[in-house]
Amino acid sequence: MNFIITATLNAIKQIYNEEIAESVINIQETRKEFEGQVTIVVFPFTKISKKSPEETARAIGEYLVENVEDITDFNVVKGFLNLSIAESYWINLLNNELLSDDFGKIKSNGQKVMVEYSSPNTNKPLHLGHVRNNLLGYAVAELLKADGYEVFKVNLVNDRGIHICKSMLAWQKWGNGETPESSGLKGDHLVGKYYVIFDKEYKKEITALMAEGQTEDEAKKNAPLIKEAQQMLLAWEAGDEAVINLWKKMNGWVYAGFDISYKNLGVDFDKYYYESNTYLLGKDTVDEGLEKGVFFKKEDGSVWIDLTADGLDQKLVLRADGTSVYITQDLGTAQMKYDDFKMDQSIYVVGNEQDYHFKVLFLILEKLGKSWAKGLHHLSYGMVDLPSGKMKSREGTVVDADDLVAEMIDTARQKTEALGKINDFSDEEKDELYYNIGLGALKYFLLKVEPKKRLLFDPSESIDFQGHTGPFIQYTHARIKSLLLKAEYKSGVKSLEFGALSETELEMIMLLAKYPTEISTAAKAYSPAFLANYLYELAKLFNKFYHEVPPIVKEENAALKQHRLNICKLTADVLKSGTKILGINVPERM
Image (cartoon, rainbow, N blue to C red; front, side, top):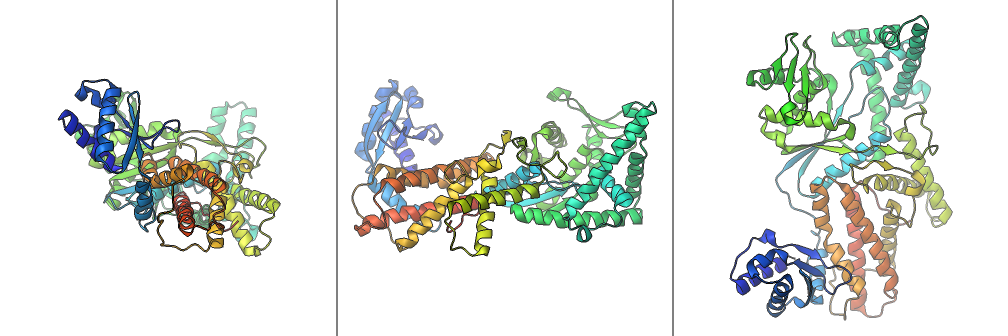
């Protein structure tokens, strides 16, 4: 629509002898109840025209109809100028831009961006919260890639600390040499099992100590198990060979388990960072902050930063004994990541319980004079809830990611088999279809909601072939592919003269033309929800188009048939391309 902006600038110059900035011109899609396809908001021009919005709109409208071939008519509603665009413009747009191989491919902008997501602990399997994190992080990374950025996906693994030692100690005491092979459990589930055992045994000890007269706080500190775990952590930090070997073995089991979960979720990473390598980082940054007067030292030797003038509080950045706190290592890791990749932006995909932490982290880095700190962003997201009783997790409290994926695939199988349309599929094809539908339903349900919002996820509701769901979009794609096959569609043949466009055909072309803009809008907002909802609207409009026009396969007017098939083919391409960005596979047939 650049030609409308240019023409409006010319109109204002010719009528009012004034030049205005392009940014002043606000173009919108015309509301359904009015004639036209494009609306110009006229209110900003009244300062120049010194006339009412209606008079200003009429004057500009008359100029545009007289001087711009593709603008055929106009109407004025208060301060809004509604323009009717010639059918030939839309046909040319379809032929020359939308049907080209490059449509929807945005050129490189030369910018580098890092997306850090997943960030699991190596003492338990991935859970439902991790599922949203992984799917959101992956989709945001792919969106930015589609919008012309060079993207680096990284995973900072929390592989050390007292919680890791709890699993190690419990396995050492009660494991009897159990391995993933001997137990038949995925490695992350096996290690998670011993984390739960530790917690149960620890609680028993606390109860016993409280029965002897200790307070709950005293019992928590004095329980033999927690003291042993703390000793194990000190031994790990001291490089004790036996402890290090046990740590490597059990973490190895977990990584093998995570790899399967990541593969099932369809997510990947360009680089892994491990807290065991980064937890000592940041001390140099603390020294730098002290030199610059950004940090101050208290009498006990601890180092702090005072952020009260920024509406925050005082924050500890180094303990009195010289050991790091979380913010210390995050400062160091942020510097290391920048040194590794020199990115223009860095996005942390982390739940909203860490909002305050990231405010503090980014502010400290800015105060330290890190030029790249302005490019840091916390992509904060809300929790995911399940309807109670819908799923039981292994521990009875947290929903396991692998269980969720298995349930989605099983629900997809049940619902697909009930429709009875895949009797000619091989077993392998059926399994692939159930996987694609199950994961498509899960991903779409979690991604169609704005990241900041908390959401309620119902596995059964997400697999509905007629609702606002992934399977509805997948089914629409498969329906189009079947139609193109039946109609023996010829690719690369343009739409020629065939008569007037129907209202829905025009809507289809207009909506398809918005695809690159929708990618950019979603990328700039770090919100796959924009793209997810656009794809649903496109699938919904296509189904309206499909039911309104006479059967395309039987159409005798060759030019009209080709034109409508072109719209079908383009719709399938956009649905496939857009869902791929979201990490969703669309089957060729269902």
